Amino acid sequence: MIKIIDYKAGNSPSVLNAVNRLGYGAELARSPRELAGASHIILPGVGSAKATMESLRETDLLSALENAVLREKVLFMGICVGMQILFESSEEESADCLGWLKGRVVKFDASRVRVPQMGWNRVRFLKKTAVDAQDDFFYFVNSYYAKPENGSDLWGTADYNGPFAAAVCRDNICAAQFHAEKSGEAGLALLGGFLSLRSGGMVC
Figure 1 (cartoon, rainbow, N blue to C red):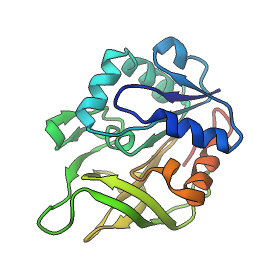
Figure 2 (figure 1 turned 135 degrees about the horizontal axis):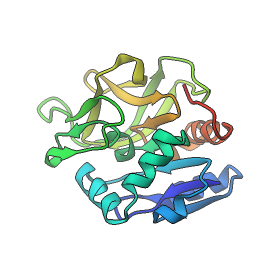
Figure 3 (figure 1 turned 45 degrees about the vertical axis):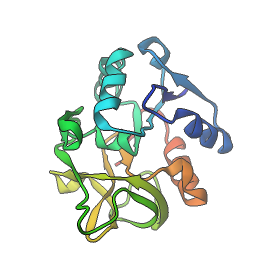
Figure 4 (figure 1 turned 180 degrees about the horizontal axis):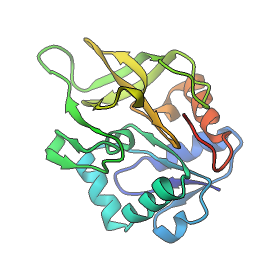
């Protein structure tokens, strides 16, 4: 069963609608019990990394997520802030994050670009994965971006006065800074590619 993490800092209803449009059934998960039995987990996010981490703690989902994704190897996708919290820390309110991937999250330079970045930006995917992602335009709303420490974790880049990490993946984990659920046919294709993976498989 596909589980979408539902917490006060997320935008789970729009992700659920996108999953349903693709013909898949899914359930919202608000507690560790509701996360049990997941074949795929999607963690959407809006707002700040700190608020997201606090919401996950308040719902007791942190340890359940770690067990499912890191130990049971459930297929996982993070979206927007759901990607940023995969790293060790964020400059936004000096937040400590999950630390599943090495690296940190930093703010765009407001003296050089408009912050937040809002709108469509072209993503170039750098490596082949089980999700057959194609270079295309995707929808972004972000003031911060991840700087992975390990180049091998970088899946896709976009340019905003210089290249930045638009997507990352490792093993059963993948994530996108852009909103796949709001990115038209390209976003649905990427989301559908992830959902089509068999339980227990790897993304990259």
